[in-house]
Image (cartoon, rainbow, N blue to C red; front, side, top):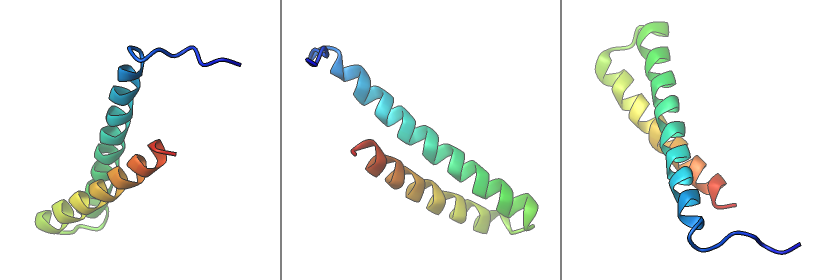
Length: 68
């Protein structure tokens, strides 16, 4: 079967890829922030630090998965 994608159409795929990575990072960061802050009653600074850490890790994992 031949490939029907043209070079002009491939730009949209890159935008979807980065949008997926950003969404994955934001959802993971929001989840861990809410869990830490309200579920475990952690201080704000600790919750933000964990949210940042998990967001970066989630973005890295989504990036690796999108390049498969």
